[in-house]
Length: 120
Image 1 (cartoon, rainbow, N blue to C red):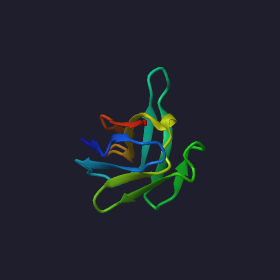
Image 2 (cartoon, rainbow, N blue to C red; image 1 turned 90 degrees about the vertical axis):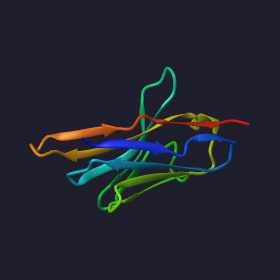
Image 3 (cartoon, rainbow, N blue to C red; image 1 turned 135 degrees about the vertical axis):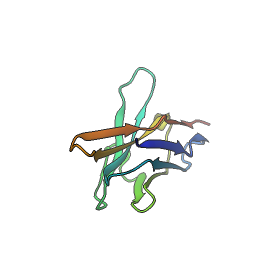
Image 4 (tube, rainbow, N blue to C red; image 1 turned 45 degrees about the vertical axis):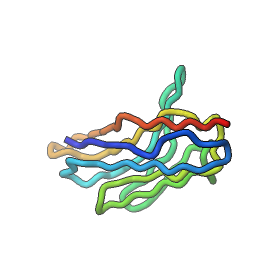
């Protein structure tokens, strides 16, 4: 089965930058979409950014112009470059992938999350 491992989280100052990485293992089928989501206590998990295999991207309005998502199809990795970070960006960030399995069923896989804390 597909497993995702996130890395790169940590404590950064407001206005700073941070790069998150996610590596997918156990991949048998092409991954259609890779993305990042985030969640804070008391809030629903929200989409941050997604990227298709062809490179089409989609961003939440709150991060447009500040975050950049990218992927390496050969290595099955997806990164999230975050800049101009705000305290409101503090959250656990989760990697997500979407793919079709052998039976044609759409599958989703999630990482365990990496904590990003933006504070002075």
